[in-house]
Image (cartoon, rainbow, N blue to C red; front, side):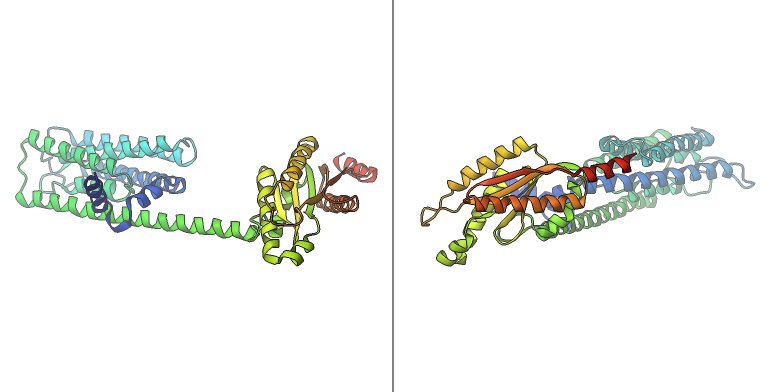
Length: 400
């Protein structure tokens, strides 16, 4: 079994080049950002290809009536029909790609399949240019020109699509040549083989570069997100910090919000008696409990041992969370301490019309906390936040 896995990995490394581990490739290929960017780039590439193929078809039609135009080498199919088919097919695809790039189709799988269908069709149509080759001109020129566009402009991240496209083209090409009985010079056959080898090298090189740049973008995006989260997170408690509060401030405005401020009762006693290391452990344990009990809310470390909670819950629902939290704090495993740490808090709730109201709610919650401390600690005091009649009158005036 290990030998099979080893051989499989070696085959993948040969196919995928020095890009890296197969799992890294899979991670890049499955990245939504890479898929979106790749599909859009391929849509632009295919639009460009279809436009160029229309130009080739029109140029060929004009060339048929040039003063020194010669007859076709293979008159089995009329040259005008060849150029007409090439032009009509690619005009249709160009119109479809134009619509897709302007948002007519947003389903990624449909867009991806559309690109592959386009490449399949044009790689198959390339051999039709044998019938438009004039006597004395290069037999493979237009054929190779079309294949260069089809093979080298798009990004083939899916090798399961690339090889069938090449296989279909080769089968179609040799079938046409065999049916017409046209003699191909040995050097032309050799050049075709070299052409495919060069195309495969370029295709794999471009694929490697595309995946490498995509991996770099993934790492940068991940590092940026990690840095952003770290900048918003308090290192000791793992809770949101004041910087996060400043960034989140606007999301609370104009909404019904509960605001609670709480701190650890007589926290200085634990620091002085057991040392700051034990004080940090108490802070970390209570912070983890806060994060767990208020998982759907926003919990900030507001000061040293002071916490701020903002919630969009109803007052009844928030009160139940607070009561459960108070019970759980008393059950935290601090058996080695002479006194069990407890928390006091104060909160208010109401409609926060603006930044001034939110700051007033902070002040009211802080007064409620002070009242809870005054009443004996290990309790939560609360009051509703009510906008004054004067402020309500101003709001009515602004809305009218």
